[in-house]
Length: 335
Image (cartoon, rainbow, N blue to C red):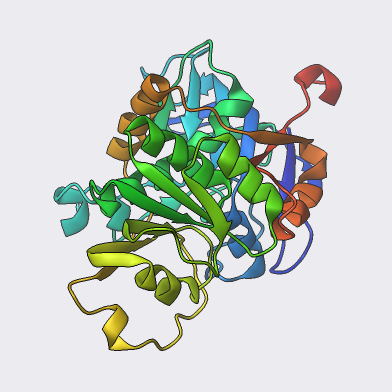
């Protein structure tokens, strides 16, 4: 197999040939068809998230065909297309797991962070943390749903049912959430980095009601705002855009420090909340909903060996929608 490997923080990924991994009890192996690139991958590489193991293969928005099962696995079946997301394991016994909040598990494992991920031709995962997909699904289009879509859906639920929704940081997650929110007949206000006309054009192409810079005010007060950009300064900006009783949801796993802000913009029962990770229930809900809402990811594809270029483009804001890595076929690898 071929993998793109991170050896140390702030270094480029290197290509490495490895023996095919064998799935252990309760595990399955996938032949990766596509793996989307997430901003969390940058946080892993930069050390913004405390390193858990090195070397590591990043990538947690994976779609592939199951090609081997470990002991005790009856489902999913060999030949089934499945998805894999960020949460790769939960203990099942801590208070959070027992209360159906496995996203807050005390002893979790995360794909592409504490266990090898999908920047590779093959990946091993726990069978219970894979999600069945249709044989007709386009792997490239489905890959961003496995994190950008799932965390976006959890954020949208946390935002509540208000009709006027602001999305700060119009990238992979926001462009999927916008489609769901429009399908739910909400008004969507897209906030992009000042000067990022490509992001605003993407938002407008998806039918948002307004698109502007994150330094601008929307034309009317928002019921809720979701912040996907890892920029703490957006929290007070979003609070200022809210109506009384509105809510700001911080959707990133990492964010720069939130600056001091006057109590007056929090008063009148405005709220700031965070979303951490996701649950398997989120995945089941969103995969079904995405089909109903006809959510379609806008993607830019890169060969697996161009993973460093994809990461650089994401960091520089040169990706419109989601970047997706496509591994070479077995025949191209000489397998």
